[in-house]
Length: 245
Image (cartoon, rainbow, N blue to C red; front, side):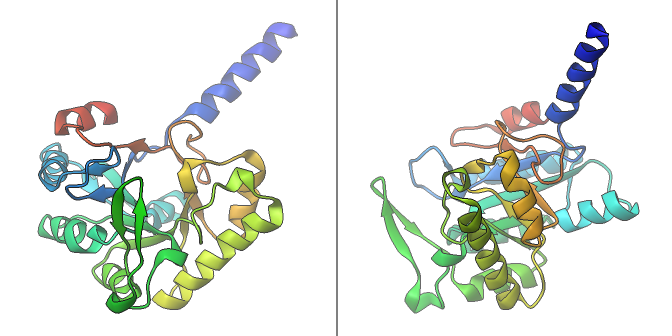
């Protein structure tokens, strides 16, 4: 009996540690900023070209969910590209690079940092870096270009540090703002700081999301804690492909 219990526990752990069938990559900013979460444009475009040469085809979470729930076919070798935080270069740099190659991405936006227009753009000094964030017309333009928009919370707070009511407020506020600005419901959430606990998952579902992504520490194959691979400064195209394999 004891052996059977141990075997069952090992199977459960194996299931929890699985990765989703469609790999997910995480980027943040693409610019000349020197921090570890920012890639140079030349490195970023080399990654995109390498993904295409490897026969990978970008899809959205909406397409993945349609496949999971209804069997809608996906292209061969699908991959999901995600971009966190909603920096201005998502529109000025990342979008043109994707469109040139016929690729798509999912952009996770911190709604309280989205300005009304270019004259009211949010600009913050963080760790000696000057960060510029998207404005609502740019978020709408991303969606109009075929990109997917998701939530990264309202204020980018670490959810495990909050209570239940505060988490619900963070997630619902962000979703309501995005739904209203885009005229259609956003379906996917990226937990701020990739930080999630079991008690938070039902709250993400209750807030109206259909899926959510986490980082390598908390991620697995469950649709509300999807594992994704972070890409950081200095990563080569070959290293990215090796991590996907």
